[in-house]
Amino acid sequence: MNRSRILWLSLGVNVVLGVLAFRALQPGSASAPAHREIPNQAGAVSNAPLSDAPSANPALAQLALFHWSRLASDNLKTYRDNLRGVGCPEPIVYAILADEIQKLFAERRQALVVSYQNEYWEKAAREGDRPMTELFTESYKALTEEAEKMLEELMGDWLKRFKGEQRIEQRKREWRVRYSWLPTEKRDRLIAMEEAFWRRRLEVEVSTPTGADLDEASLKVIDDEMERMHRQLLTAEEYDEFTLRRSTEARWADQAFAFEPTETEWRAVARLRNDFEKVRKELPQDESEETKATLEKMEQELEGTIAGTLGSDRYAEFKRGVDSAFIETFRVMKRHGLPQEVAIQVFNIRQEAQMHAEEVQKLAPEERETLLRAIRQETENTLANTLSPRVLATYMEYAGGWIKGLDEKTSEADP
Image (tube, rainbow, N blue to C red; front, side):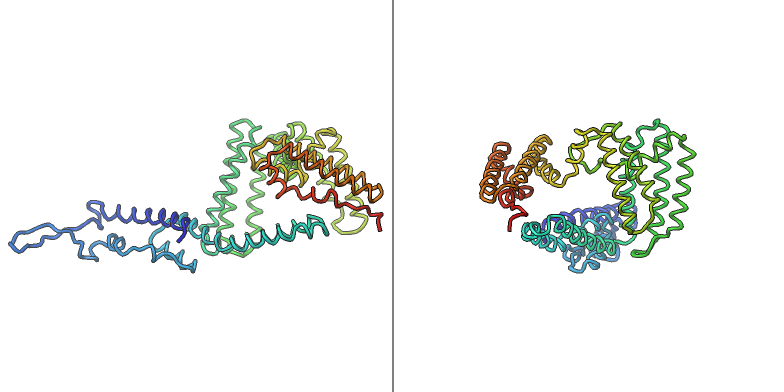
């Protein structure tokens, strides 16, 4: 039995035993220690507890017969039933089973990671890193969903409600920030309203059998009523702002690393993207070349408008923030406690090196190869002077694969 299992079992068992002992020792309770008069050999009478009478005290009898070995089982349903059978609280049952399932899937996850790492560079060189990364992400997500489904089947409705309550509490924290622009009294009323409606939705989810489709008609009734209440509570201007802030487009900068829009920037771009989505939804829902061309033109115009709205420098910062290469660099630096400025500096080194490597592609093969080797050497020296050996080693392992390709570039014009 490993430490994790012992920890959860110890916590659960202590809760159960505490409850049993407390009930058993309550004076005047049905389970309190009873006494009887027992004559001794001298004819005197003594008060002796009925410790030898199992039926007199079921709680103490259960306590006496309890053993940890009676709980654990390789069959998780049996394990669950054993824990519940001794009165273990559902949150503890959930934590123990979640830990067991995590261990069941740990080996498969590790095998997936090792396979990804072993095959990454070879496939990335042929196909680019996107297909390989997407395949890994999809496979990892499938494993996670399989584990979650197993846990849901074990815990049933309790887990649905538990997760639903967690989501509501998370939303309440988000609402306090998202609706902070409203007057305090109106914000609190809006949050209370939202919570009440989300709890109604939760009841629909809990009452729906696992694997079955939700009752969309019931959910629509709830959503429509919530929408009417929003319009009644808020002024026209407040409702317009409310609609903008809860739209998907309002999160346009959420995935940008090392980029924080000002209120003016956020609002301007959110409205641009919202307007774009309204027009896009009016396009024919087909795959015709005409529709594709129209959408592509609209997207280019939108990007140009956003760039003009933010300005060239801020737009470049935003685009860098959503660049996967910068995100990898940012995470490595953050792992070592370094500020975002270091991540930006390292990313700029990469950009400059790759730009120079592209420029020399036009040269003759021998001259090109010499310059590419020089670019790689200079880049490695610059990184070594920028990062400590420990940080550089981590960077090279997780985000530095591009360096190997600097002197491996060849011109497409070569035979």
